[in-house]
Length: 106
Image 1 (cartoon, one colour):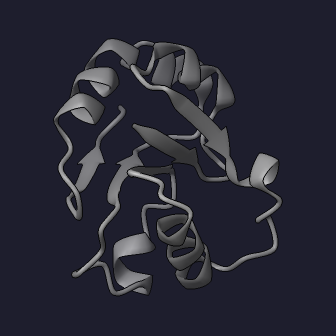
Image 2 (cartoon, helix red, strand yellow; image 1 turned 90 degrees about the horizontal axis):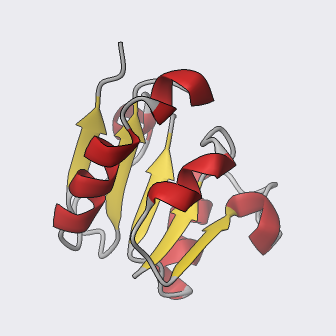
């Protein structure tokens, strides 16, 4: 499973995920791409899951027909996300191609 972290996604989360490959938008050199172009390039590169903290993504982009699953985290705060890392891992394991899931983080 190839996972791509958007710019606001805390990098330490990669340690909690069950995957062969976790990389960031920055590491890929895609920091200047806007969401629509970024999603297209990520799919072309074979990513299975896109993890973001952009809660407006569903309002800004056409998400139907995507091959890549999208997980939206409800916070950018690593201490808050870290408390839910086991549950986030479980969600990632259950995502299917083209699915969209919002993970609320109080």
